[in-house]
Length: 296
Image 1 (cartoon, rainbow, N blue to C red):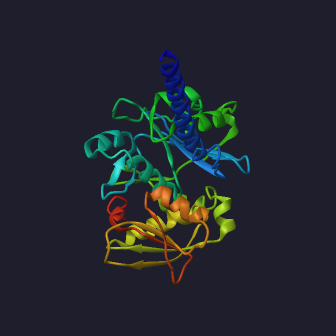
Image 2 (image 1 turned 30 degrees about the vertical axis):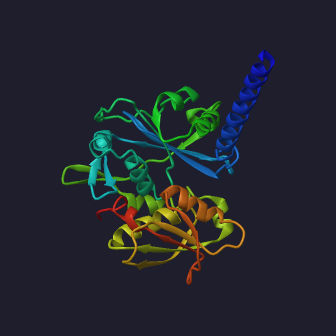
Image 3 (image 1 turned 120 degrees about the vertical axis):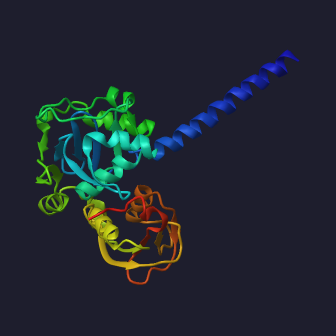
């Protein structure tokens, strides 16, 4: 009897270990360790907000410092909003994706990885932007709040390890005083730095996108600029009233393209097989159009 009990415990232990290994293995296989990107944007939000762009393919890295008093367009119909007040807006609306959407639209590229303080604070400019802020450490990735998975935190922490602030080329944003507000000129920024944040693999695939919106053409234009900033060509923007669910549709026999997978992941829309007529891929915004709504 004792022998049978011991055998049962051993079997349970082995089975538990196998389940844990399978679970961890699946998580690791979906991480950046096995799915590296040509270029990664990481936003470190706080008193001195910086957006880092790490070039894995070309070894060219950028940093964009943001002043807390600068206003930029916040998707979701919120209009212009101070950068330093975004955490309070996130708390009020219970929407942690606001930072991701705001800075992605701002620089016209995917900003997929966000770090921000645990405590909700309103930040104000002290009339200077600290140019030589230390880079985020592995500890930072685990201490700060984020939208980053466990293994991606390790990957990103290691990417910053051994780098110095001088390894990052600084990009100054363009602003203008409008009605006594300091406003980020996203259109000027997009024209000046077009091609800086693209993914080589998307250009290599050369997939074309048809972007379908329900109501707001201006939002579709902003999202078109965001998508093209990653090296993906948008060849048509059209209106489609029916249907509420966002979808990424591609005609494929074997597997979805990297372009389709990235659109699905970034916009959190399911992938579906279909027959696009005038493009390789259809991105139908559906209900997410409201979340990405941008006032001109």
